[in-house]
Amino acid sequence: MIDNFEKHSAIVCIDFQKEYLYTTSEKFPNSIDAQFPQLSNNVKNLLSRARDRNMFIIHANEKDDKEKSKWMPWWYTLHPLGFGDGHGDIAPFAKPLPNEVLLTKHTFDLFASVGDEFDIYAQKHQINRLYFCGVLTKACVMFSANSAFLRGYEVYVLEDCCGDRSVTEHKAVLDLYDQYHIKVINSNNLFL
Image 1 (cartoon, rainbow, N blue to C red):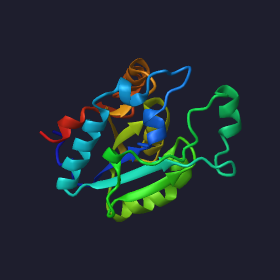
Image 2: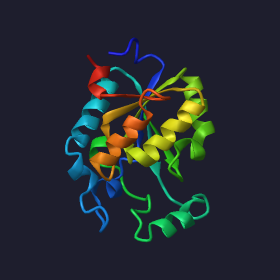
Image 3: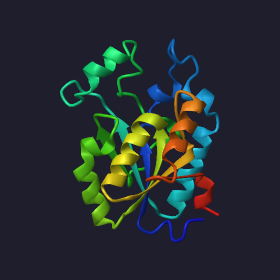
Image 4: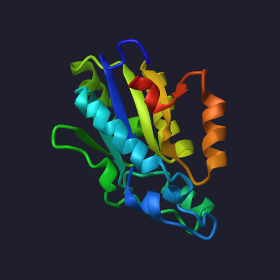
């Protein structure tokens, strides 16, 4: 267990939206939940244990907007079939409770959309350590984790509570960044 991890820490849940978890495409015929069958249970257990310890939990969901999501034209040039438009409902296993923060982002990076709002909340509650979970590992989770590092937070990514379009991509991204400016851990190591 990480020493005194609950104090000054928050769980950050990124994009646990149904359209990302359960959809398939020609390029990705297997959904994220099919490739990571334990993901929903792992996240459900993580949130339950964090709530039992009164940890701060911050949820961030994508809502793409042609006015605010400046990346969209290039994205659809690269991915003409798309992967969802970021307007989906939150999956039941990751639904925020009324006392938990729910932020809306308009791009892959949480901090590019609501960085100042996030920082004000974190400073108010003396949060300096963030534990990220969510989908996609290579996109919204890692973009947000990288920005959190640049803003001065201690950054952890919970490998068993993240998912991507393939297990190979998920592992490659985590292996690339682990111990460089983030630390990759299993969520069970928080609650020994």
